[in-house]
Length: 212
Ligand code: SF4
Image 1 (cartoon, helix red, strand yellow):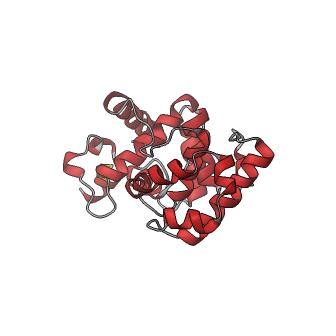
Image 2: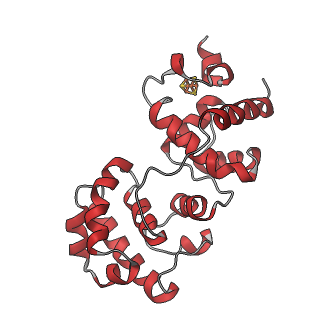
Image 3: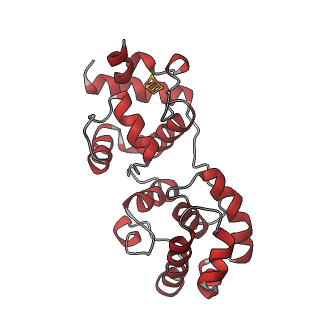
């Protein structure tokens, strides 16, 4: 099967079977999504969703968060991974968003990456979820699943995987494809012992071809 054919079959399957998808992070505003995505680095969405209700109740927007001190933020997020660094980043990020951007979250990924705690993947998540741009954030699930299925080469780096997916998936579908790959990796194509027997795309998957 050529790569082009594989992409087509996989996209068709996801479109038919997983059409309505979104982030599993809970948020009410653009600023809150950015905070949640920063918290989700190396942490589960489930854990982040347990933390954010209290955090957003105390500091619902950039202005309120910018007036909090780092210790106050730390105390509310200490059950997630790397709470010291994340509290510092969220505090500094909130100050910049409040003072420089008047509380608004930019749609420009280069601009977003100037904010503390915001790397390429986080900026791409914001671009995809808030603005439906054709950006592919590559997290651990997208990275693993793309390589297993054969959408990316086995030896591709994270950046090469991102560029390969963006090149081969129609731009208007990329925001959905991002969620498809994450959810597929979270619940079916899991890191250890992928559930190939019950997987709907096993007929088009490179990993299955190699173990048959
Ligand atoms: S067939 Fe297996 S390896 Fe391929 S996508 Fe499905 S679960 Fe993952």
